[in-house]
Length: 141
Image (cartoon, rainbow, N blue to C red):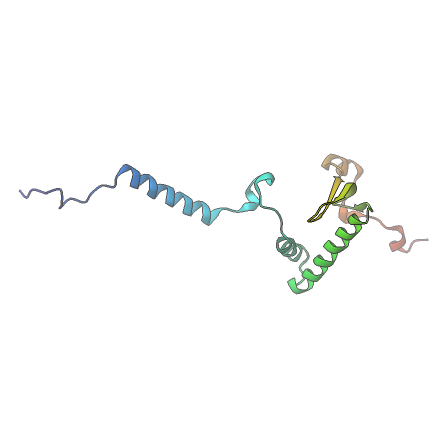
């Protein structure tokens, strides 16, 4: 019978090495499958202009090179309108009301409130953002 010496037998990983290997495997699995959109809204990263352009492209079907200038123009108009003190009423975003504005050394600080109808209020009224009826557009006299 051959005896195995400690140098012949495979060494078992220490508890610390085993824990580290498991944590590394878990971290890799989470990083590979993590989708920020599945996180609660408070934990999702801020939406950047790039993300907004990609979302517009996905929802509208227009090309990115066409959507990007339109999104940039829209953001500029919204910013200029709020900076001038005007309120915005933009369904389905809601009514944006400027509540405070002040200049600091580095920026202009605008504080606004956004009022959106609740989901139950939308359902009760039967209004949907895509169901807006414009009597002038219908051509009925």
